[in-house]
Amino acid sequence: MSELIEDGAARAIVEGRHGDPFSVLGLHKRAGSWVVTVFAPGAERVWVLTGKEKAHPAESWGQGLFLCALPRKSAYRLRAEAGGQTWEWDDPFRFGPVLGEMDEYLLGEGTHRRLWQVLGAHVLVHEAVQGVHFAVWAPNAERVSVVGDFNFWDGRRHPMRRRGATGVWEIFVPGLGEGAAYKYEIRGPGGALLPLKADPVGFGSEHPPANASVVRQIAGAFGDDDWMAGRAARQGIDAPISIYEVHLGSWRRAPGDRMLSYLELADQLTGYAADMGFTHIELLPVSEFPRFPLIQFHSAEHHCPYRAHTWR
Image (cartoon, rainbow, N blue to C red; front, side, top):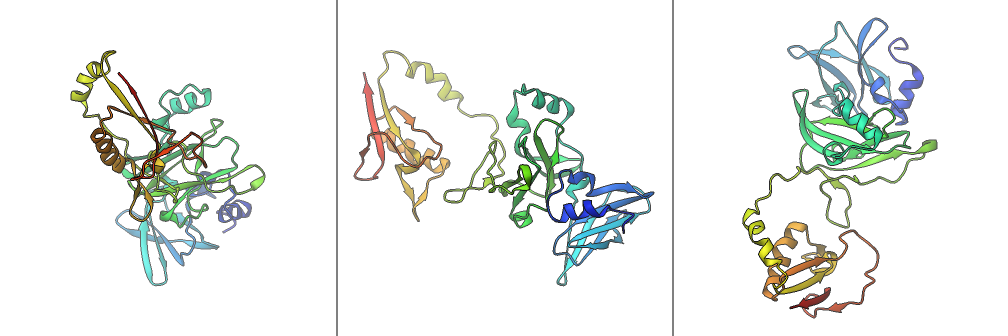
């Protein structure tokens, strides 16, 4: 076993403090053999599946770390057993990077103009497998992991790949899809674990008080051609304007005292404003903050802070 993995590297993996996990986990050539290294906490036995479901038993290093020497380099899947149950999965550490060299260069230079296309969580097909690609900028981190229900919120299971000096970390997690809740676990300078972080470039979020990011597909083309065609006339200098200024978080509550989602607000708020005779809606800051500092007038019906302005 000592020929297949260095003891210090193995301990760093199982303790979640290895800064370059892709150099240890996955398929690598060691001691003249192709070796698959798998970290599967809770598994009692692990097999590496190659070819036509040929199962190669892996040897346990301990603490959830397994190693399997293959006769040759091969594509593979993993199978594990625990408590009489078995499961299979694609090893995220067998996949290459998703971000290309040009992305890495522009990110490092600070001139990338399409950050939303490279950072955040994206559902895609990578190396013929569907999953989710995660990427986040954390330049001072010693280790970054993506965590969620899919890995029991365990930062040791999906540590990410550092992309050179860009400060960006990435990983492709096969089998995930839209709707998965996630956060990032960051091991900061000196090895301190920071509180879990939501994705600063996330495209979805849980409803408060929950605050995890949620994997969402980025919307496609807009279907507002008719509205855009008449916008100029409605915005003319001689057109009447009546603005309803509203704070989304406190305008109206859903059953169970839950905040409304943007989709629910789009349906309820626009109809309410139109019925009241307003032509425009002005949103107060949509980011969360502890107090609402402006002078407020409250609707007796909805108990919502708003101010109405009318120009004619």
